[in-house]
Length: 286
Image 1 (spheres, rainbow, N blue to C red):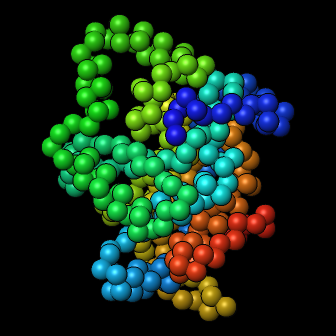
Image 2 (image 1 turned 45 degrees about the vertical axis):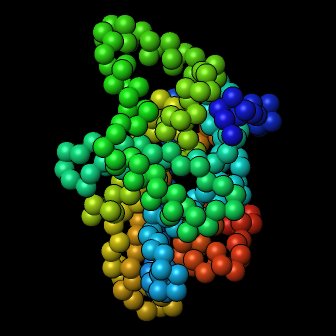
């Protein structure tokens, strides 16, 4: 699984999608926005029962990352990215977590890249998140942080030229794999969990640096009046907001895939039973 083994799928794409690379050459110009409300009325009791039975603590973040990883494995066209005027199929699924080194105002932000394997369940993902976040919050600088610090020692006039060269190489898919593979912005999906600091979800822009076509922001859990079978009930809900690069796939395909991920989060027992429905049905409201 490496940047150099990502496959050029430009000629496999429909003509109208190939022309989008010329009409909207930047990610933010091709951005589509989704908002998804997740009903946690079954999820939260399942998490408590799972912890009582196994002693392992799961959170909404681990469930979301595991479900999103499953979605990307089951819908590989969503695991593509645009580079210059070409489309590439990513070799492997990766999720980057945006987190603070410390849970305090003014703490440094760190981006942590986590591989998601086809057979990963929420427990496997939770263990990987715990290990990776622990390393990211250690006192030592990560490799990417050391590289950034080194680049900032270069005079601005030279650094600006180097960045332009870097972007020029990136648009032609000519960057060296050893430089790109550990970079957290060369990833399938970036996730920011604002709910962990008590904030609501927000839409995030897509970065032109790197090749990430997907951004998700998780908000805080709130009790929300919800109409169920004609009656109003108060249910725990969490909102997730997505930004998606439409050059890689259309919005309907993305909405259908997100609906499948939503079902896994709302009913985690599907992970145990193996029941998933990723068919081409019309998606529920996402």
